[in-house]
Figure 1 (cartoon, rainbow, N blue to C red):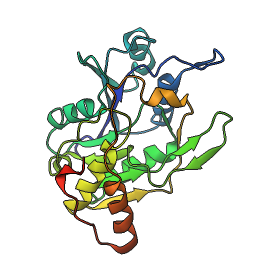
Figure 2: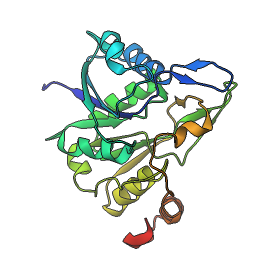
Figure 3: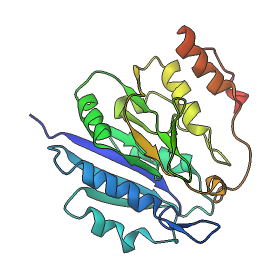
Figure 4: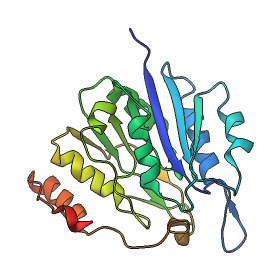
Length: 245
């Protein structure tokens, strides 16, 4: 049997040492990576971690990340020279990074996975579906959480399927590119799994962190989210004009 490989791909800007208004420090990204390391410990799969970094300077990745993942998973850090954060820039870099039948897990830097996530990825690696969309539980400041079944940013996809859909659209602010991407997956009639039964957690952070490093602008039209809701309800995907971005 050929080697079984799962590629984890992340885009980041300053999520390693986030300070709250009352002076607390949140180690969002170290907690994310630690959860990966802990939950793949008993796996027979080979894991590779690719991090597209927009010059994070809150706690530079090279000061801690290589040591944390040493002998656990392979690491490649890709550095952006862009002045502003652009998640789509980082995501689209992956379109030319992978090849063949690579299996890719796109994971936001503030998400904590569980062993159930790893088990699901490894099961899907052997399955026939094209794409899987996870539904994180969003934690509040006090640790209570609510699952977001409409969240679209944490997903797995096979490389040939990735190349069938258009690139992620550039956004000038937080939110929207993932919804547009899922719309295109459905439009291309890819086989999409809704992984809503698996637990993973979005760590709480100050609300203003979402847009802090973007150039500034507006999210896309609600038409994409509305079309996806209609598809899940009726099985019919409304057509959206390209100028709706």
